[in-house]
Length: 112
Image (cartoon, rainbow, N blue to C red):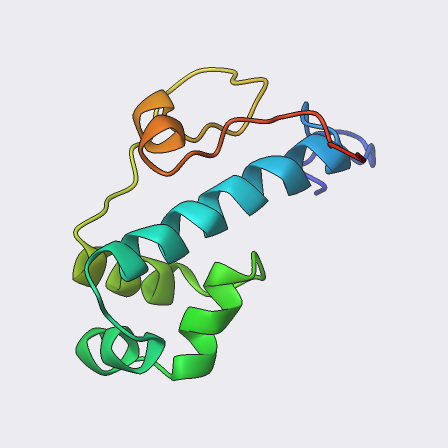
């Protein structure tokens, strides 16, 4: 981005590490999949009602990128919503209520 600042390029770095982002995205994806299963809908059902491809629902549930329009359409069908908060957040959040409802709390790996 060069906004007339004498040729200096500005970049804003994310405050979230790639690993932390992946963990939070995984929790978000798991919450979406759990909600779909909770209301006894298939990926095809959700896709049809949202007006998107089934592969888009599968991608979202796998934590892969989908467009904002696709995300909002799928969440609407599932009765979920996004909530934005202003300020410098240092983490990507999945609400505590969703974490508890869908058992998304981090637990140490059990190798036994």
